[in-house]
Length: 125
Image (cartoon, rainbow, N blue to C red; front, side, top):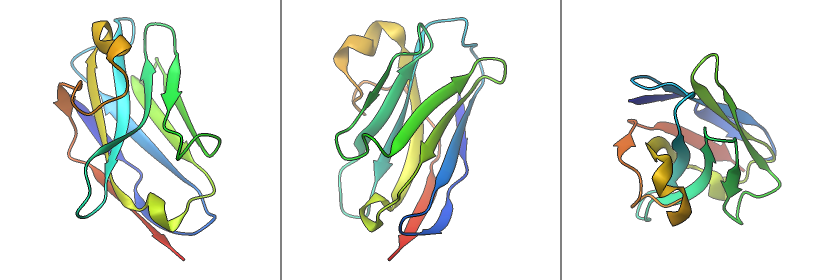
């Protein structure tokens, strides 16, 4: 499973780093790990995904250039570095994972099989 951490309160323009620690599998295997977010009253949306197969990443247009997804195979952890945060980035952020065979289906919540409980991010203006 996956466990998120690192959420909190930050001012607009600030930065946060979210962590997603995975257990039950290793990054030597081929998985897709993604970050998703859900604001109140809105659908869950894909933010960024990475594959442990070769480290390829994808980003939503709304975060491209501001967020960076990386992984540390030794720690079985994925990091989402969020810079220049905006009030519209405020949401509960979830980490999720699925097998690499689903990579071609895109960074979509419908594709993911295992979910963390989420970590809240609040951005004050």
